[in-house]
Length: 402
Image (cartoon, rainbow, N blue to C red; front, side, top):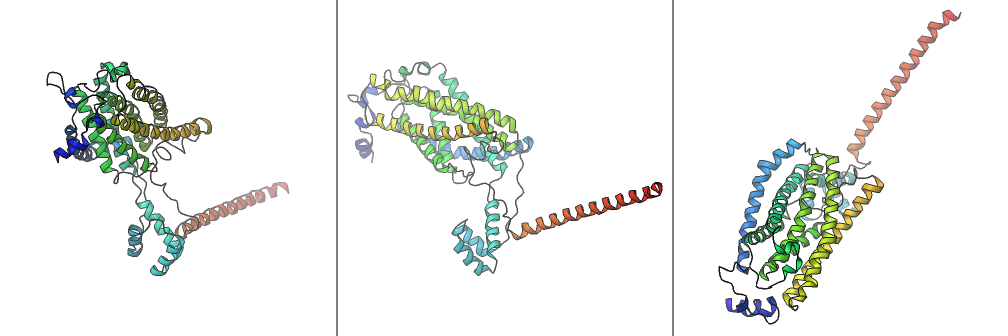
């Protein structure tokens, strides 16, 4: 097996520039650490450790913090226990067609309107609570903030942080510092944990884009580490972390009902996101990997694959930038930020909005009918009382007039 991997997977033309051999990049312990594929084995147990740590964090820190900040969950009406409808809901569809509604109506002996009402209440019952969404956002906020601070501290004195040509000088024989090694391992372990939990986390409208983003990020981190594109990779991770913790903090404040602070943080996040993802990333990182790198070596298979992943990432940046700019437009020109918040309708949107009861629903109509009748009765009583009072006043004035 090892011979097969060395023959096919670890072929020099895949991983190294033309004319470079594996023996040319061997390093001694004094020269520093050279990234090896076996180092990434630690990311899988680290991902499970992140999941366990998240479980403890959400229950011991995030939930009490949500109560302290005033996060409130909506009171939802639970659907009645109807086994046939429950089975259809779980095994067939959450939104039955008109023909399926008619068939279920005959099987259960209920009207079609009651069947539709049951499914609506059942879907609303599965909506995640604000507390759950707050806990998820707070966990990501803590990691992104710590990762950004640690990454910035480890890169601020690195030569390639200021001069992008240093990313390629001496490539591929570039030693990796211990701090940058663990920066890579922790980031990849965290994104792997997000991918493992994506099916149980709050599902959003950009679910497919999120999955593609996680997979592309994991492949990008893993491949760049194996091919020793670590210097560029650290810059990419730092750029992403710089805006991600702002987004997660804005979500937290939204769920807590701190609207003005949430709006202010969203504006800051939008500016940082647009500058880092649409200006710095293509202007510095992509320019360096596509053009500047060719001054130091000729293109090879690993170089092409690495740039393809970066371009996929940039396509996702453009997609999310479109959503952000659309929200900024509504915020600035239409004044709809209260109704179209970042955290609820566009960029970080849940599966569906909670569905209100239709006007034709029997239970809600009875409630509205009772409320209308009480208002009409109150209005009628007021009118009668006013007429009687006016009549007394007129009668009391008649003797004086006579």
